[in-house]
Length: 163
Image 1: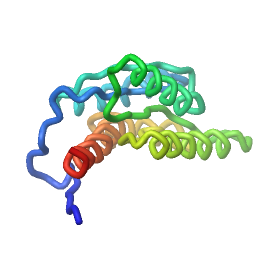
Image 2: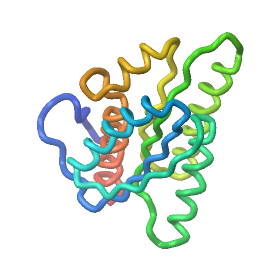
Image 3: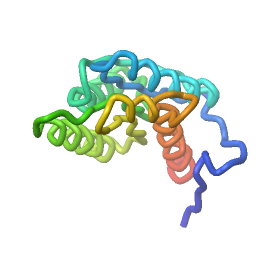
Image 4: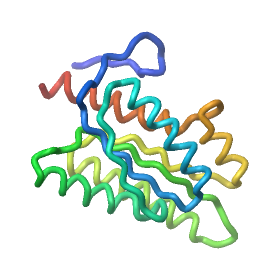
């Protein structure tokens, strides 16, 4: 049995120098996307990861783009070791919110499990733009940084149990 601790629990996390990490960001809400990306980059840079960024229009496209990028990198012989998904879905007046929020989350889980790749899900699902900014800002919720930390925690676990 392997015991782990969250990287946010304190203490120094082991570096992941040289790890190739894919960030896939949905940029439907540009200012929110900038905040999420800033948080993720800060965490990944501090960990010594090599970052590649793929940008798509919105949250629903993120899982497909992640799958395409993972397959392409594998074919090139330069696989990604982890994925960070970023984006935002804000509730509107129609059922569209539930479809986009649920299907993007399901799609990301499918990608992670099918590829055995550590994934941090930083796609916000909120009621209002104000809630989204509270969660996205690096000085507040920093969910982009949190998604990167989650991906790195899983990557460290994978490296320990699958050397």
